[in-house]
Amino acid sequence: MSSSRDNSSSRKCLLTIRELAFLAGTTPRVIERLVSFEVVCPECTEPEPVFTPETLAYARKAIRMHEHLGIGWSAMSFVMELIRRIEMLESGGGGHDAGKGD
Image (cartoon, rainbow, N blue to C red; front, side):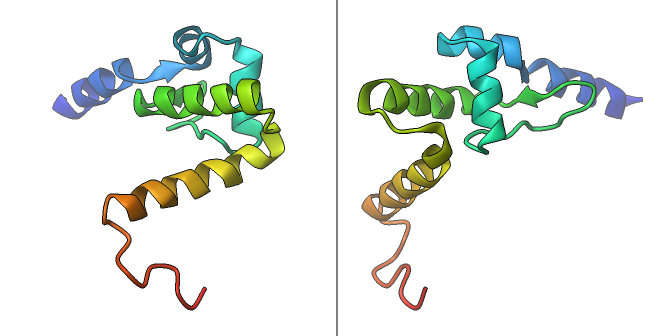
């Protein structure tokens, strides 16, 4: 019985497309584009796509880069991955030889 309560409480922490769009200052259509280009990924898709709260900062960053730098949605996933790797290296999490041999 506690597992259904745990599932229900964890579900409350997740954001729908509409909620994510509102908090990110955009439209649900833009969030759908981010999903279609795998810039953001829903935590689960049934009965509807829902996102973790951490997705909000990621979506906001992608939207700002699209609006201010003109980066297309189709390239955004790649750009965001590069930024993530750079941040990891700068924080010391990548090690000195990170990426060698790739």
